[in-house]
Picture 1 (tube, rainbow, N blue to C red):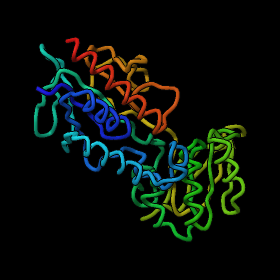
Picture 2 (picture 1 turned 90 degrees about the vertical axis):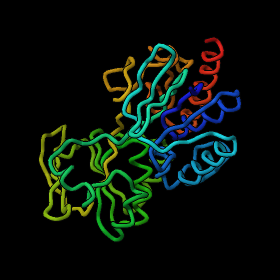
Picture 3 (picture 1 turned 30 degrees about the vertical axis):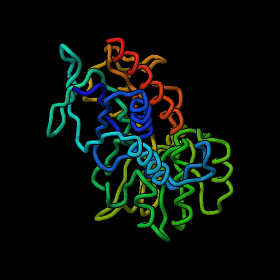
Length: 300
């Protein structure tokens, strides 16, 4: 039996593993490949202290190298369930049932879907959720970015270096991204904005060729021709496999010690309800979760 199983190898899970090993716990870190979480797809990270600018994949490679140097054991597997047992927990994967005294859930979140006609049909054929992954396919083309938060504007800037024209479509009349990103986006000649507007349908034949829009203030319908749609309208936590108290969006409810409603089961990072979702806050969650796990395991 392990002292601790950590599910998820993003910033929270890797940090928790590093700290837990330093506390002398027997740790197993489980995730599907590749490790690193959502931030791995970011072309540029400018707000992680100590690095003025670094790519998401390079930053997470450093996390992984640090964990490996500390002797963290890692297993590539998909977790389907975490079961409470008489003497701890059983983490059920696609190939094993792993027992431990405690578990940290650090599974992060996945992009939220728009849920409009044409979205699923054209995913991979003009619809994308990752500029770093798919941006090069749209060199010299006209594309739309849906959303107004940090991720949307960050990737609109990335795409503006690749595409001929980027149109940001936002359901409100102001952006939610940080001021510095807004200023950069407003200053780019090939980025324009459509405000107070939602996408009602993504259209095309073999590939995307346009989006049907509706102004939420006037009710006016319109259509713009575009070659690609990049969607950034929030995230959905990866928490379906674990039975703990959650909010109505599926985020795990955990206190400041990262304790969930189940003793011995902790949550860290973007999968838990928090006021801010960043690499640094996820890493901090992981450190706290490892500390709390140490107290729990030793006390037990």
